[in-house]
Length: 395
Image (tube, rainbow, N blue to C red; front, top):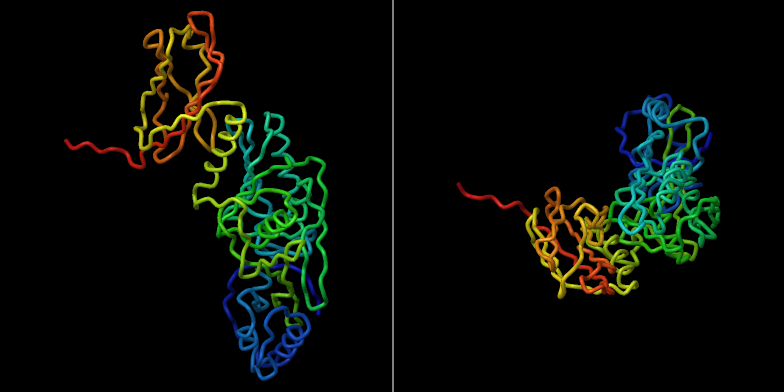
């Protein structure tokens, strides 16, 4: 019997074993379950008449693969250098697995779709580019990330400077600690990690580890609650048994299985990205002494903004004027057309229609020169939302 530690989330069709091998395979499966299964113990294991009856007594992540199914699995996913442990099924290396972009306020955004075998090098490349572009803060997105290699979770945790231990894994053999793989290219201490109800397995390993060690801010919804790890046992008949062999917790023992990881900052589903960016931009402007001005809701996509001053101003040429910005949350400053409608009023209009239902902010920076030689000392910021639906006019 050969054991490899790999985990998958997949449902495989059941095919009958041949009579000649069924009894031997059944005994082999019973022995493996008896020795290694981690969970509520089967009550009728020894009386099971076939492998199907055995697996029905186990959790939803334990599955038998026929020889044909296991061969197909190996052809698709196995590799000579595959990590030893996986928290769910992951596809071969995809160069688009990690993506990133800069947002307004020197905030970097980095999204990970799955915990692939090449995650460390991909994340390092993207974070290096973000820092070179001026990123001082980071939003890391693990929403809809169903997991992948546990080794990759250990590597990702190495980017967080406050993480000392990856997780604790409880098995029939006892409890062992997961080690962090240190990364030289460290994330900011106050990194924000987005999760939702679909963040599972390796994503939850990262989230619970960061939360237990106060190493990052977890943002969004409570995660799925898949805190089990599966091992793959090759059988004598050429098939395999994928079996739950352990449950992981945070370094301080915080459970994940059937509970999920609760975020430090709760945000409504679908609003996490723009919502967290809004918080960061707003807190930065407030710290710099900018004044908050309540903005409108449900504005038109092509709304024209009029910024009025109490004295005559020297706005200068519109093409050179950069003291007023229109920022889309979750993105950057958008292109606008500016025009001084009189010596006290600047008109600002988006160059393209704004996104329906999106949140924006109009920022007026200090330093705008007045006609009397004085300049604006205090900046302002005005958040607003665009209408959720386009207006339809009757003909």
